Image (cartoon, rainbow, N blue to C red; front, side, top):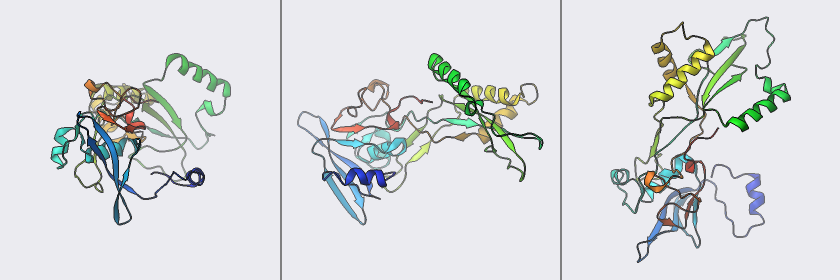
Length: 287
């Protein structure tokens, strides 16, 4: 559980049927197959302290551990791509090849510019100072939808590889991709639940996404006639950042397109009494 602080305690103190365990590690979901071949999530195995425990599910098991850990737990449970499960020595219970695929991230590149000492600067983002302009931008986004690429100003020096000079002021103009073309993977590398899965985001492997990044940087820096394109590509590949908005590892797509979760978020395909409800189910990035 990522957080178990005051709000959770307030909820728990009045609920006799709610038990929150801090620092408990889920090992796997235990399923059962009926005579008609239907697979049902029945129990959850987890570690707490030095002991292993099993809890029975009378109604359903809700998997809500984010895009990074959901594929891990499902694969340890024997649910996923057959090749991956065979590689880590887990018996295949339900074959869902899309688990751990279609992973996406928001990425950005932010060149920083040193300001002259005589420039008074608080922020270049007029949206923070003028509510009328902010309203116009909101109306444009509602009318035209979320842009594929955003240009965002930031009063500071978050860019790499060069470090800021002490005593100097900087402004950074960052280009952020809302929709990435590359698709990453998250897969287990061992049947040990304590060993983290392998995360390969496959950043910038699709040519279209890299071309958009180049055009955005040329727009920001005004270097279309100054720097050779190859130099810019190398700079982007070595200096982009992620915003840690991972999603898509258990996508809500049709099953024949490697989908994992049904369109109503009621269950994983072919498994009853098992829900997956968090960013892992998003088939595409949102802004």
